[in-house]
Image (cartoon, rainbow, N blue to C red; front, side, top):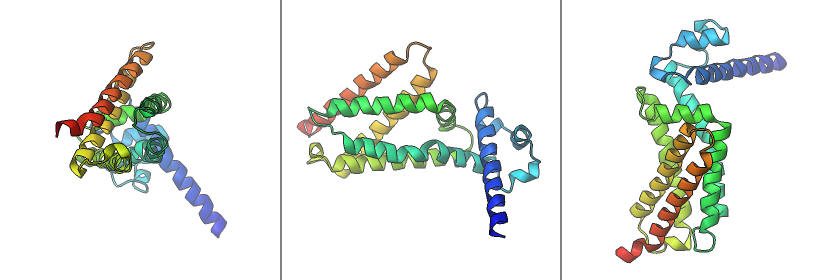
Length: 211
């Protein structure tokens, strides 16, 4: 009996993933608000009623895509920040590693990046909120790491969170720019992203000078 249940569960998960993959592919050329449930099920080869065994509606599927796109990045980003610093000697390592992380993610997950970039300000409120929640969590995780570093001595919580949000916004903008880059110009985009992060780092080191 347990073996049969295991097979059924595996098949259910396989169908769920197929629905997510099909939707993501269809979203290459359209927004989530214009994508129909029947388009997705037709692409997978299942009846429309089967969709509801996995998702309440298309917005629920969109939220699942947000989680699929961003969940795995949390551990990677936190580990990157913890392994690098923002001092004069090691700040360049953090800058290079951050941009390298973004470049690699865009290269391996272009459809996910395109989905997040489009739906961040799209017409499906539940998906906009899910993306906003994920980016807020990213900012909080970055802020917590910054707070542990000597360079943050004397900073108040609000200013650290503002800096963290700028860092996360920069990552999102860089990913979008890389996605839209003309082939052969990716290195130029990456170089520009590193310069922008240096400005953030420089501002961090001298922020308290102006207080």
